[in-house]
Image (tube, rainbow, N blue to C red; front, top):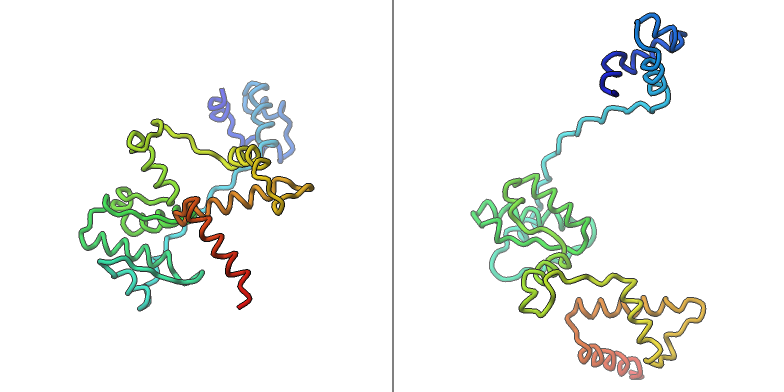
Length: 235
């Protein structure tokens, strides 16, 4: 029994005695312990790497105060607000400040929806909001646009005509479908003999972009024609 062996002869002590020059037999004789137990403990002590204690988590520093522009955006209420900002300008900090302000104003956290594009950003938002308003954070819906959309599809699958647990198509399945339709399209530009899958990946990226813009096939074709006409225009 591992716990019994550790109680009889802790591995730390077995290692110390061995470093003093004692063999397993000498340790067993000195302590009056079974040789098999001493030998196992000594092997564990010498062969299993020592586990360093995890450092204590540093105290989380309070968030930096919002600057004037961030504060204006965080306090905006009513009509939709479009905030344009580059990397490292504090967009996440501003959004967290806005959510905290809504909670402080008495807004029901269950009515607050916080969406972003990546799982990493969603995790960071959830962590920061939980650090400021832990109870409220657990009641909010914080996640990605895609996860929220899937949640809606699952909740209203009957109205949408989908099965109860709709299965998401991964990229490899999408490429397989494209491959079946690819030859029938009779394309000349998107043909690569060295890497025939590469054009398909580019096409899927274009399809994904069209979905982001809520552009159906007709709208996409119209936009493509508009771009072609502009490219052909000498002016």
